[in-house]
Image (cartoon, rainbow, N blue to C red; front, top):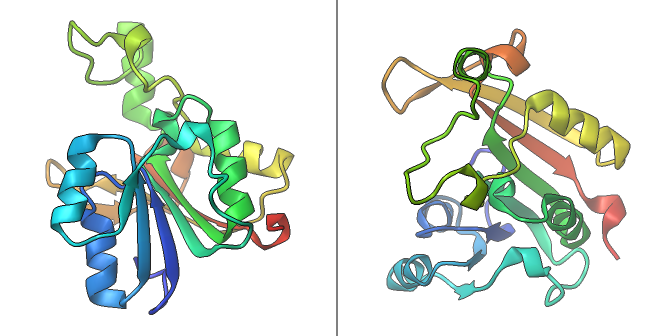
Length: 195
């Protein structure tokens, strides 16, 4: 949240119930918009007085011109998309800065889970097993760095975090983040990709 300056024009893709957008509007007086696929999420956003429309970001962002937003946020969203490459390219096209965060598959506990259990880590119920789940694109920090390098998406900043014990609070991870960080946070420079 510190990354976003006051009054910025912001689009939150996969904004859920709008909690982040509402906080940014309250604390930073942003010009905020959201896209959410679930009707329940859109209803929750509307109840908060947010401007959010129901849509699937896998279908693209053609309603938006290049350079439409100061910041586009993919907060724990990219790995849920069916076409992450396309979604990220569209994000870079319409923003000056992209904020992308995701759970790190390279985190040591996930590595051990795969090693000892032989299955992908995740909370899959009997009716929603891995193959029916939208969570098919697990990403490590190294994967994301490499992908950004291949596509010439300049990384302006990156931060990495893990939870403190069983609490929801997080602590920064500076050493060997691909191994010790549970979550990754990247800010990408979208200036050169705008139309």
